[in-house]
Amino acid sequence: MFDLSGRIAVVTGASRGIGRAIAARLASQGAVVCAAARGENARDTTKAILAAGGRAEAFSVDVTDTASVAALVAAVVERHGRVDILVNNAGIARDQLMLRMKREDWDAVLDTNLTAAFTCVQAVLKPMVKQRAGRIINIGSVVGQMGNAGQANYAASKAGLIGFSKALAREVASRNVTVNVVAPGLIETDMTKGLTDRSQTDWSAQIPAGRIGSPDDVAAAVCFLASDEASYITGQVLAVNGGMYT
Picture 1: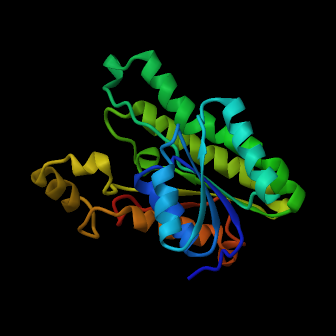
Picture 2: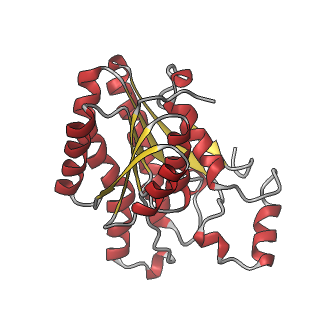
């Protein structure tokens, strides 16, 4: 159990899957969760958190739009006076072999998975530096560490996120702001639920832990890095992959 009582947490891509699990876990430890997603998509997440006795608010944001991100952070600071935790979770995949990959699919994945993290970090960094405290947690992927055929754009975005995080960690450590990456392996989400039983068995056989991970496995790692117990950890990649890549 990690005490996050009263911490103000912004989670992007909070409408489902890993993002929703992260929002719920942070709220269960006492954080006030600002769940952000496109349109009204974060409302179900906040309703579930409120029903469980937590504190949460839904925000509409397009992470690829600088003005939208700035408006989100301004609204959070206006309501709560601070931002303590930022989880950059929003992401997309548009898989295709390199010879067939369209430039627009390359650009869309890099814009959403990497450039949006830059935009969100710039928006929260001023209040975090001013308050001399903050936790920035970027959601990467095992694909950014080991690569995967047909995912050159996705792998590039997640590998870039690691380099970005390591450089940023050195910049802001003296201000008591930590920056880390959680890199999930194969996680049970809407995408993996579409796999056949045989495909799931084949994937599990490649994972020493013998199973596909759950969104809660990722959320637990994020919760740790957001806590005071992780105050001396920065610039690191925490792999949550069941031993798939070491």
